Image (cartoon, rainbow, N blue to C red; front, side, top):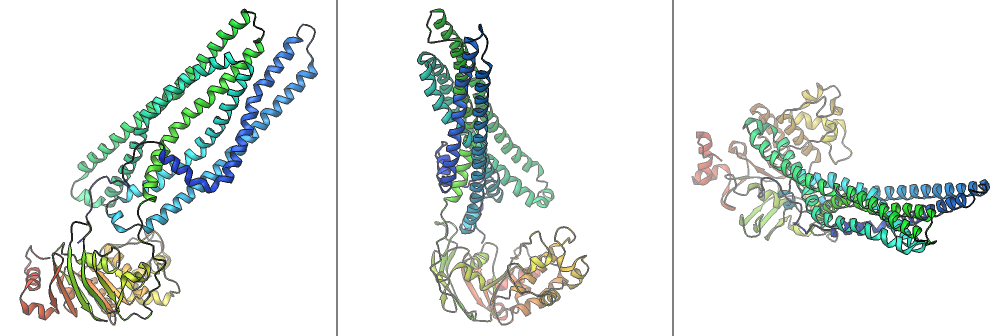
Length: 602
């Protein structure tokens, strides 16, 4: 019985409150790069200081020109002040570039580590996670969400550091120059800051929804593209298009609202900046007209520049917050995956079967994919080495589930499975997998040469070995007709039928040559003539090893040593083909129904 699957969009983790906690978690994740980040902050401080003291030097230049304009300008002093300003601004540019370069390097390394951690995490997650999560949604987390995080860390974080230093520095200098004008600038600027805070609160939920809906869309697209032939055959295009349009509409709505709200920030900050200029001139002119010598034309122009430098960080923050909101939503999804419970660590397990014989015992095993829905009820069987064991029964009886438990793809609720007297619970999963060849109904081939697909994860395989197994499964003529033989790339020069794909996976299993074998409807995708050729190879493959064969076509398992008949998770009959027919029970009913062409055939 296959695990329960949910149709439609799936979530990668529990829904969390839309806030910046996830972004804070991301920054904590980057603590290993603290020395580089501190260096970048130091450069940012230096660059901001150069930016801050620039207007002061410009004010000195204006004063120098203004006080000597009647008697003659001191060009030497003016040139010295200009050179000083060039040095200040040049140094600021170099320091800012250094900061940007370091932060870009750090963020790319952090993104690389994040992808690697996600990849390692997916290898440690239990299979029930993949049963309830679409492949497209996982891919969206690895690609879209990590890219969003990378861009934000590379650009917005660096800008925020510079802006914070610049904001504090300008604030201090403004109060040093003139407190009244400083307060005037602050009041107008913080008006915009207050508006920006409200906008951030309103838009965060839309950024969060946008990232989730992007994952849902990728999941739906992946499902449709994977089953494209079925969608066309059943004329399901309209329904799938309607579903896509629904997700796409929600994504459009979330994207539009989030961009609209975040897009308001810069115009508001620009308006606030212009408002502060007006207020500075009004207050400054009032001082000058009133005869207050603390404010001069140079001071007024200097303050206008400081007002620009003061509002500029707020504008940068407004712009960066758009990216940070997206990164916060992306971080929530990424860390929802990274923080998921893993399969138990098995590094401490050292039990291995050095010379496996193939005796397998099922001891009252019980299992359910969901905690409250048990589908295997007290399954027990004692199988001897070298036996060919067929597992038959109607759809949903638990045949594939038995195999999944035997391979430790899932953990038992209770009971035990032993191989040569050793509990598979005491062995590492990798060591259990090494004991089995597995040939499934659904083939898996990757983009690569035929040779790479055949020798997958095995070394020391010669061309003679490949020739032998390909001859056994009937692939020799096909390989000889390919332009590059075993080195032909699948999907380009080599176009394979479903039957040929299955033959390749059978040849791959023969090359691995494990002591136990699992065949799950291995010949269901090949024609009768090819099946006969493969069957002889199967007989050779199964000779001397314990093999488990799941078959719906009962004619293929007549020569099985033991046939286990399952119904509703229980063994209801057990014996060889002739014995079960003599009992005239459920197996006989299934067998006779198949050859009578009855719809009740399993």
